[in-house]
Amino acid sequence: MSNTNREIQELLADYAGALRDGCLPSFLKSLTREEAKRVHESRDFWEATEVVRLMNGAGFGDRMVTPDVGLFISRVDAGIASRLKKAGASTRSRTRNRNRVSLQ
Amino acid sequence: MARACGRRACAAARAKDNENWRTKQPVMDKRLRNALKQLTAPDADLRRRAMEPFVRATFAIFIRHLHRYLGNEVECEDVLEDVYADIWEKPDHLRDIENEKQLLRQVYLYYMRKRLREVYRRMNRNLYLSQNDLQNLVAPDLGLCELTSQAELKQILHKMLGKLKARERKAIELWMQGMSNRAIASQLGTTVGAVKMLEFRTILKLRQMLKDYSREYGEED
Image (cartoon, rainbow over all chains, first blue to last red; front, top):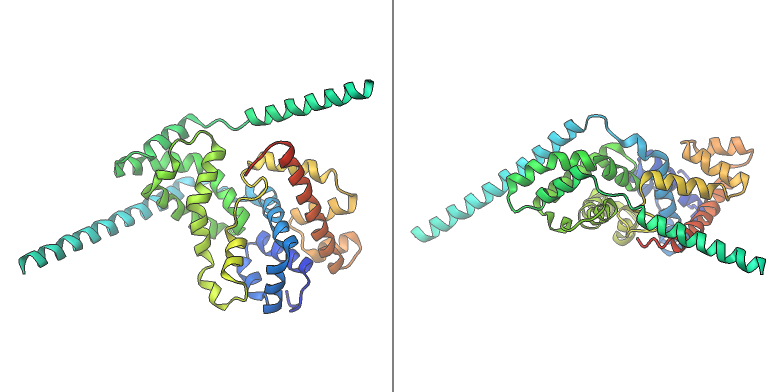
């Protein structure tokens, strides 16, 4: 991605490669002002990205299935617990503030 | 006369195929249906207990879908973790779900997109790409066949690759095997620039085929 004045077909190929390899941020950072403008104006680019996503899903989606879903479930549960805690803390502080106002 | 009969038979076969496609919508698993019912209950604890069977039944579907937009395992899991917590917190959009496709649609539109948009939001300050374009790249509207299941998508792509010229098909197949453009160029005996052009044209061709397929089979994503 060293070329700084890429044509739209090169930009699409680089986007596809970045998406496939899981390094989209490096593609986004590599865009120059002219290239970003070119991307914005190209309808073909946007239409092609739809197919690139599908190809990415069909070709490489299967490698995503983690064998240990149990571990992931515990992460989700921890996230929920932390949200519950946060919600509890905010209601407690709201009640405390209300009590303080009524005492005054 | 014979030609008219043939055309009529062909139209009938296509209508039957279309009908088959409509009725072939994946039926929802019983466990998933029960988990969804509990997930939309007003009681937060009941919802929390329902998360485990829900995650078990949907993890593979959701993570594969997310992979289409991120392509990175760690980011996909991080986003999905937040998506599940959001679902637990506000499950309103998951009422009256009838099949897996509808479930995926609702989850993508109301939970995943929001989280996907947040992934690169902080990066935007240093980018030349506008906020709108960045969003369209990372969390786009649902496009052609985007809710199609993994197995069905593979079938469709396989069918479409068969309709391409040998060189076009080879370039796409090699790309889907994970090869770099340089490696593809050396396999095809050409330059990297020519490979990028070939890929671009072939992808646009595939898009037209997908459009025709969606029109023919009445898929409205």
